[in-house]
Image 1 (cartoon, rainbow, N blue to C red):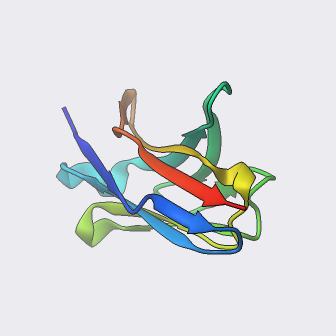
Image 2: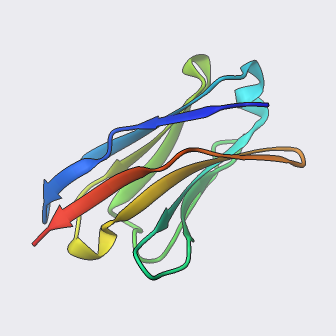
Amino acid sequence: QVQLVESGGGLVQTGGSLRLSCRASRSAFSASAMSWYRQAPGKERELVARIATTSITNYADAVKGRFTISRDNAKNTAYLQMNSLKPEDTAVYYCHLRYFTEETWGQGTQVTVSS
């Protein structure tokens, strides 16, 4: 079973930036689709961004133009660069890996944007 280790969350002021990292413990990372989700208090978990094995990306409307998802297959790591952060971006961010029918979630990392 693959494991995902996330890092990079924290507290930032409105307009600031953070970069989240998600490192996978498997060599088949390059054959896996990677996504970032987030869950704010009292809300359902929602998709933020996805990057396919072909590096094609998709974003939620709320983060388009501000967030960038990327991957480094040599490091088995996916990233989420978050710029122009807003208080409404405050949430626990989860990394997600899909390898054929196998799905794995990271433990989550807290992102808090102060106004």
